[in-house]
Length: 255
Image (cartoon, rainbow, N blue to C red):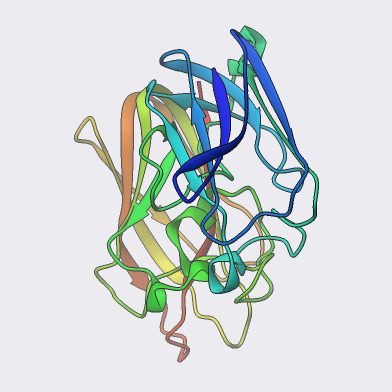
């Protein structure tokens, strides 16, 4: 596996190893810089590409992962210190078997629009004004602060008041799940909420989830099902006068 920092298409720092690799980058990132990670093949990885975002166990399809360092508005959905400073530690290794047990398999703080190789990956047919603080990736970043809106830690998936909004979560491989936990945004009275949402799974089944006005987790359990992706849609807004329901976090539990 290989970790690189690319600048203007050229490698300015790199490190590689068979089952584990790390890179200490002793510069401030510049706009346009990219973290590039090439795995040895498909499988499970535990990695950390930023000290603030921390470690995460994810799945790779074996293709190269490229992440453009966020600046300006694109940085607003991250902690102020993320990707900042003059010394950075990037690390990856093959995941241990015991890291793959029952857990929230939806979490991936390193997801982004351009991510097509490191799963899970969240995408949506609408994101409010195209702003980073309302992007689909915020729903799987692991941050569940609900009592505000806008910049981190209140980044959310914002639907731009569109009742046809849909969020898709792709796991990149087959998983078995039996529990979903939802955090809706709760910056009342600015926010509204949904009374119901519908999950459509890749096996063709559907599941309606009742929701309520709440700052905190809302959970639904069901008989285990084996899938590779799911979609959240048919979001029915409450009668609250606010036009702004939003999703803070989507957690999916399984193996």
